[in-house]
Length: 220
Image (cartoon, rainbow, N blue to C red):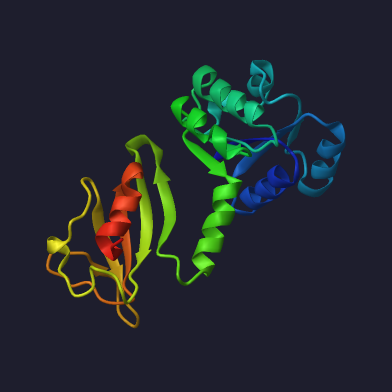
């Protein structure tokens, strides 16, 4: 793929390096000449000096043929504008924006950014995965459908233990899809499967029903 990266800071540099190693064609747009020189010395001629928010700069970068644009500057407003220009002016099919302030995520979603990367959420999810008592972990957000993919760990005192899936009072729109048990292959979450202690369940649920899903599986 041809991927345009806005921002040549640490995130943009390491992202560009990783994408090149995967065989993608990239171009990093960066405002500061000193960063351009640093990246060029390491990665070669994959940089363009300019403001990634400007139409003329994206035109020079060939955004009209880009498969994806990723904006990872330290400024949320710049990331939003860059993605908006790419999507609406150059019809770039996929846009990804880094969000530094979690409060801005809803705005980015409403304005049609395909994927948002919230560094705070990424760190929190990593912490949650390391805490064995934490019951629910976010795996993926499906923004366009208003759904979350989550992993639920079933503790010994969960109300769902010993019950069939079809007998659970799941919230509307929630679907249990896969069950992982120790030393067994993953199981499809069919209606007659009985929930066991230690089950790791992959589920799809509307973003506003996560608490209801936890109550249905664990209890208050």
